Image 1: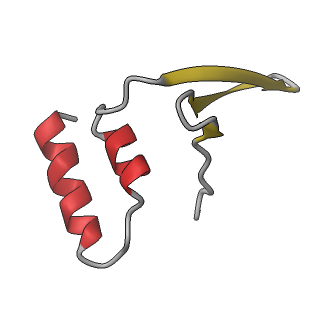
Image 2 (image 1 turned 60 degrees about the vertical axis):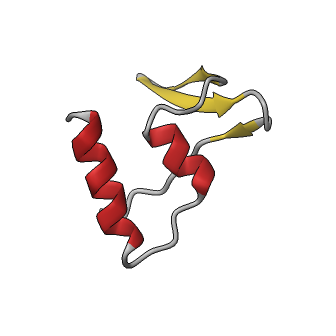
Length: 64
């Protein structure tokens, strides 16, 4: 997916939902402080993004 497609998709989502600017910048690749933490649960490895400047993880809940 191209940067333009991601930007357009976020703009469409913003018509119906509030999107946190931190999350928006993260998805648009505008953050320079992203690292990754890996957590293994049984045989599955989860890669969880971490924002160093604000000391927070990016987590989301799947709605499926």
